[in-house]
Amino acid sequence: MIDPWYPAVLILIILICLCFIRLILGPTPADRVVAVDTVNTLTVASMVLLGLIYQEVIFIDVAIVYALLSFVSTLYIAKYIGGEL
Amino acid sequence: MIAFFLTFFLSLFVYLILTAGSGNVGLWSVSELTAGVALSLVTAAIARKFLCRAGNYRMANPLRFLLIPVYVIGPFFLEVIKANLDVAYRVITMRIRPGIIRVSSELKTDLGIFMLANSITLTPGTITVDIDEKTHDLFIHNINVGTGDEQKLVLRDHELFSIADLPAWIRRIAE
Amino acid sequence: MIAEWIIVAFLAIGVIFNALGVIGLLRFPDLYTRMHATTKATTFGSVFTTLAVIVYAVSLYFSTIEPQFIVLGIHALIAALALAFTNAVGSHAIARAAHRSGILPVPAVVDRLKEAGR
Image (cartoon, rainbow over all chains, first blue to last red):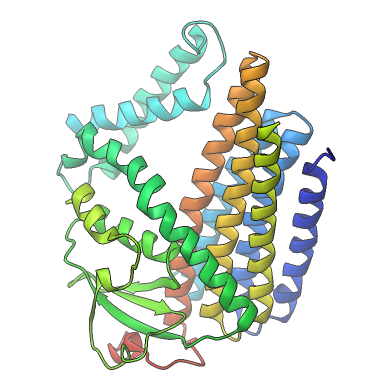
């Protein structure tokens, strides 16, 4: 059977590149924040897959910390857009 | 004092999960256990006011804690699958009828409102936009407002879900 | 052998729903409907690709008793939980901030939040 992990990671990276179209086009700042949030989610998913491919558990730890940090940054940008900061 | 011990046990639990498989005392090594206890004491001393701000300790009952995985794996997961098939259908066909509706829930605790808002965000065609702080009403953006629903001022919470009655589950866990 | 087919099925489901989420992000007309696509479909897809990693780790742990695979499985499970949890709260924060800054849902049959004067 063909190793299924490599095509999955490749498709996820292509999807991340497609998100940049909305990041450039987006008419309002909030649209751009949604695009960045999607990029963060897909990055965490592909990091977990890469951690399995290279057999390194440390990649998955980095993915957990990346998810939490991107959550905090999303909250702060949302507060800035809503005018509470 | 109760808040201190609850925060201590919670942070020690998270630390032990993150370092499982490091040695041979059970699954952990002696140095990891020592560091975990010390760091949990520091965390509990600093952060005990954040976790138990409401001042009731109803969620310290382990039976209520064990209901949360049952809730997530059982009815919640079925609703998530149905919601995703619905979103896939709308992405392909673009048949949308969006609108923001108002939904009343009888929940009173903060944890209950939190769980209901997050469940609504991940399930059928709805995201929570805002919460009325006084009456605990939720403002929900619905991607496909049912015909006739735009005339009603306030909807009840169980009208949003079709497979399982998620608000009843949340009421059982958090109230 | 069964584990391999389960892994391929989970990866396929995850990648297809991620792709649907990104297509929805590009196709839908306004901010709130775009957030429907990204929040639900992307969270579901990412959780399923992570579930494939967990199934792989558990099946390898039962064939070779090595503790590093159970570590891999537990950490992937924590990553999936963090992802599902933070995506819901983050999307709620963005929607609330966008409505406060004056972005209205453009094709909308009803808007109770604007009528409530917030």
